[in-house]
Image (cartoon, rainbow, N blue to C red; front, side, top):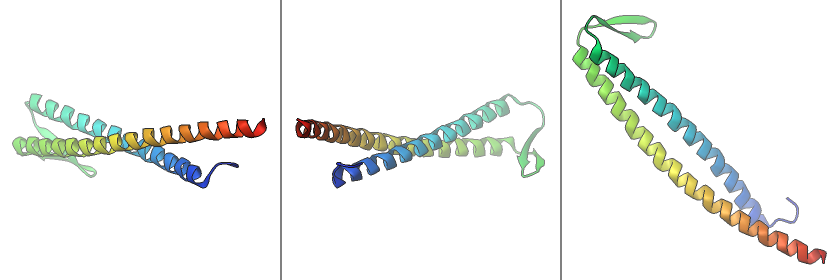
Length: 122
């Protein structure tokens, strides 16, 4: 990055960090959403169930005696996931704004830098 001001170098570094953070948050959000969808599907199947219901606990399958309690646990887990997903979405939006602002700043600075370099060559 020869000929680039220290300020611009710093902005480029910040841009790269924001980009990495954005990718991480987006990935977390997608994983959390997949988990939420799985819980919703599990609850739907539980609603349809008429026979014995089992749940896994570590390496064991345990017969569930109180399906209402299990439904309540699933509802609570789904709600927790939705809160986490909403938080990740807010974080993602904030990072997108920072990303766009830094991108515009860097592009403007690079445009000015290119114009200055072209003037020097003449």
